Length: 193
Image (cartoon, rainbow, N blue to C red; front, top):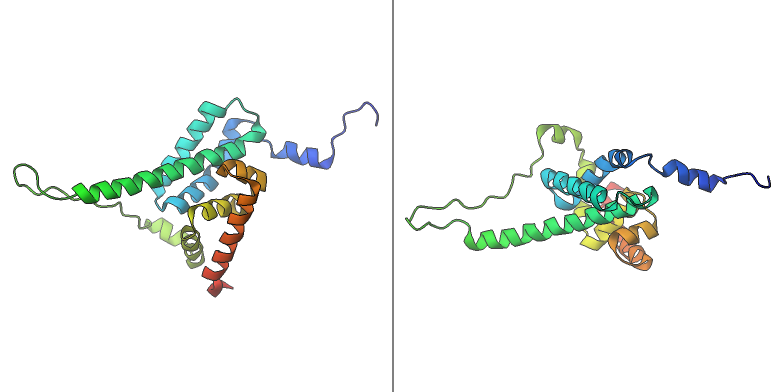
C-alpha cells in the first residue's frame, strides 16, 4: 500500500492504550493508585490524600504533556507523595514522642497524641481475605525501593522504562530491586504455595 496510512498491530495497540482525556485516565487509574498507596502507607485516609494530591499535581503541572507520558509521570508523583507522607509521619511520631503528654503551665495533664486507629472498618473486614492480608503484609515488609519496583512492575504492569522514570532510577536498578523483591516475597509467602 504505497502512499496510504497503514498502522501495524503494535501501533494500534499503542493507540488503544492512550486515554481519551485526562479525566478518563484519572478515572481508570484511581482505584489501583489508592490500593498501592494504601499498601505503602497502611492508612486508608492517608492513601486517599496521597492519590488526590498526585492527581491534582499531574493535572496542574503535566496536563499539557502527551497522554502517553501520563502513566509514568503519575506514578512518579504518587511515589514521591507517599515517601513525603512516610517521612512526615516519622518526624511527627518523634516530635510527639518528645512533647506528647505532659502538663501545661497550670499543671493540668495534656492529652497525649494517639495514632489513628488503622483497623479496617466492617465492610473492609468482609472484603479482605486472609491471602490478601498476607500479601499486603509481605509487600509492606519489603524495603521501600523493592516495594516500589514490585508495585509498579507487577501490580501496575508498567514496563521497565516507565518504572525507572517513575522511580527516578536506571532500568538496571529497577530489575535489581524487582528481583530482590520477588525473592523476598517467595520466602515470606512460602506457606501459600
